[in-house]
Image (cartoon, rainbow, N blue to C red; front, side, top):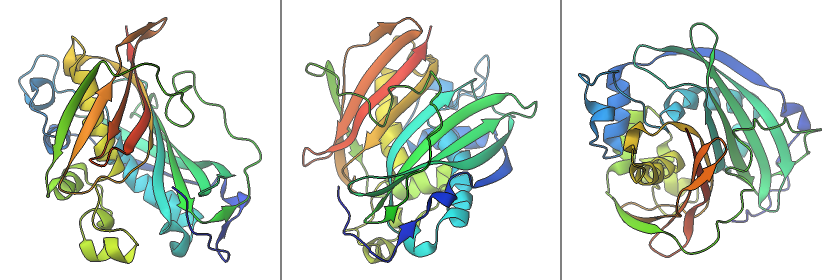
Length: 301
């Protein structure tokens, strides 16, 4: 993935540290169930409101309440002509405690790092979410590449939390062949359903005219939807299934996922670690190109 240079467009180092928020969100059962249903989930953990202990949030649900903050901070940091060149490149999530129906959460977004890469400017937004008592709930490092755009490097990137190290951007390819492989059918309307259920609106995923004007061949599936589908398959193979306690996850994004199409998700055997269990995975589009690479899920004991 390499962008055509746009000499007149440049991101200065002064964008690092720009912050927006906090913005509050009310999480209810309807939103939790809608997000899971958009992914084709049928497990009672995600859908049965009579379940003892209540509903569980899908591991990727945080993207739902983070998206408005990502838009807010980009609007402050980047002009529209630069933002149009952005693609989701990396994703790293740390879950400090489970999300529950009834939570009132507050999210803040900050431009954490900026550095030049061969394809363009790589910028990481840090999205930090806390509950009504101020306790941390989730932290996400959302990395975007602005293809063909130059930038100044940020003075010094903030350190990763221990939960985030070695996940997503920069994680090594797992050794050996996959232990399992499964296909996921991508329906023609999945991007539309995901948009409405996740409440993530970006017209390149649902409006062909907008997608083509942005230089895409057609509408494409959201990167977070692709990651969520792969995470569902990986977690589903754990003995505890959706109840497995996800502590963190991450990946790098690659090839676009077209609609309709098929996604092939591959995983390695679970690895024990001092903190719990690690699951490595990736996903390929129909051409064999990697849509997701270096995928890692860490489960608590």
